[in-house]
Image (cartoon, rainbow, N blue to C red):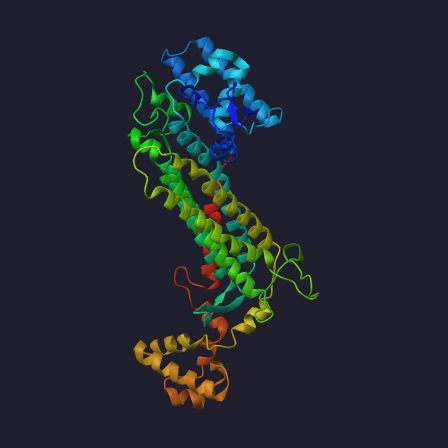
Length: 475
């Protein structure tokens, strides 16, 4: 396009809709409406969809075999040149669809103008987005699996490392570091599964829905779907071009994934403090202070935590964009790609950074075990000890609480009480209590499925590794 006197004159790259208008659009108007800086990442998906559409047009007798061959050859050359860098995106084009079609016409002539037969940008963009997501989501899923594998590997080395578990950020019960890291991994497993479920819902081809009402031409939508390896086609043309549920669903899944990374990062920030000193982050994944020479800050964990708000905002942006749109297509829908892509990019980079950061960290097992000495983490185990002797749990709970109170007043740990003090609480408490309520005994005794005992942690690690091995995808 060429700018003259504040408007854009038409050339081979004119807007696809310009024929209705006597004047070219104002340059400022074009700049405001263009989306090519956002949707350029779908260039190869647009080409793939165009190949399938052109082949179907030929099968239906709408274009000749010669024209179809010319279109395919032209599209192949565009893809080759884009991938090699020989062809650069023209950012004066309205969108990636316009750029591909105009470039094709420049290269093969009149046959290129037949590519858009029976197709609207409304169903074209719906196709491109689905093709892009089918290509991009498995990359993200594999990153999730890489992090799960990393956590599983660390957990394998720490099934005997005990640490305080928390509720309300208060000492609760002793757990293993392996159990804690597996808890992170299981939440990531759900993130992988959510993305997998969402992929199933975009496995329908929208092409052929047209602008909103289908086509009078003898299009074979099912043929296009088969060529693009979709399981079928969408069933309502109005819904097809106005549907952006998949953008919202994937961005919602991104938000949950980012929330999990943020929670992990919050714990890393806490554990890296002098007060906790549970973890020692690599200097490669820490920063210093411009004024305080001694500082070693967990900035990357903080940045992951901080960028969570961006992903949430992108989800809210999509929901707000959609809430008042009547059927079918509205130009508001052009604004779907930026939040979707930005949310994807954010979680993708955060996954990579978190994996590197956690895999290079050192764990202070001794400090973690020391943390189990305070806070009366074994109070429930004292109650369980009494339950085993036939006392109702509610009564046992009260006896244990009394023992805790005595220990608090004496300024000692529960396991430091004398037998006389334990007898004051209940005559059923014998010498074996000390073995039963040690931190390691508390951990070892929790053998219910999913529990924190070393045996249970090892089972979880094995399950996680098995799931990851089965789910890795070829990209």
